[in-house]
Length: 470
Image (tube, rainbow, N blue to C red; front, side, top):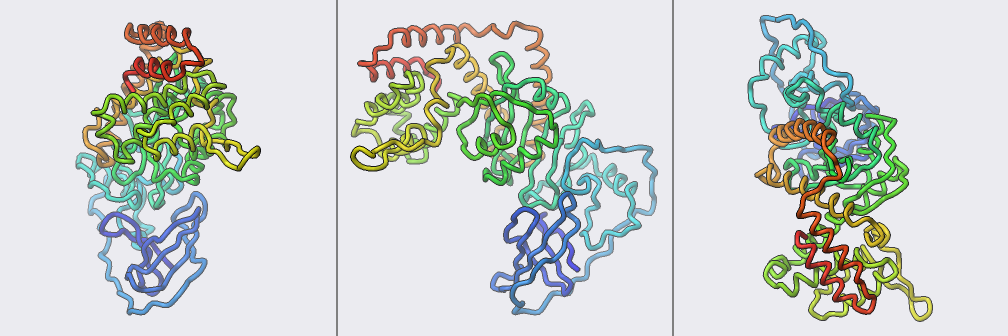
């Protein structure tokens, strides 16, 4: 017989029938690989949990022997209040999807000490007595329930829509509202955005799912992800299907992450996928930072222009893009690391010799990110809308990687402001745009109208000069 206990850091450990203690080594699906908490001990334990029942744990194999004595534990007795107040009715919405018993009503004592005599009313009473306290800041993803205050919006509406389980080391949380789910059902134009700096310190990414109303990007779901692996995105989009099986998006504006695109397409067949111009330019700038050229990009105007011209390739006719790239890349001043990165992901590298020499398919095909044949006003307005949300998110969350409770508080405020924004969008002409956008669109359309295929570099520079916000 094995059971789970909380570690001092808020995570989970496993205790076997001989009181040896294990910590999580890795997890694959519903199978968890545990290793002895003593560093040099070779003993391992493999367990499996039933789907949607993280408390039902069974040992499927043991590997190796312990080279040290066990540590018999003397756990404290669970505290049960002398007075029990009857709670008239506290019902947690059945709309929270979770991989286990609702985490908000779990007793905080180790699972091995949970007594059948501790009933639901006692647990709710304990939560009510603590609701005015600031919760302890968690330092891990698992091993704790989400407090009651963070499950609902201030108007009482459900905010936590999905929790993969408080004992899931790769825990996923989805926040939103029932109105958001309705919006995603009725609106078939979706967009992705991901932020790493704004995510809580124990989560890898804050992933947001938007709808496009007119040309305005409106965030509807906020997701905390432990990593950006194929498996995690598959779990996320499976959870979306469970939240509403009638989701049927037709177009998707992506943020140029191949893993989430593949996983999404497997769950939601799409008629049209398009790359977001803002995310493309952000990716290129991020790569400049990664290879240590941020300072040069910021201070060297000529170098800055050369890099921006790679984003401007999106404004060339598709048949001319590769030739335009070759013209840009033929410059000894450009870092080879950047040129190779762009070629691999956006153009396609050359393979083979002689007559068999061909370009392989890039990570993101040219058709995905090219905007030449699209309505430029649509491209610019949507690009600016996504960028405005991203920048507002960065500026509102003043600390990089805020603690979980601060982040959820911010997301609650954002959801409430989105509801107001939706009402405004319904009451105004969505075709109205700011004068600065109108002027930018006019200038870009003039440059594009005068395109001469023999003057590609000059054309790309002219486009880049107008895309001053990149």
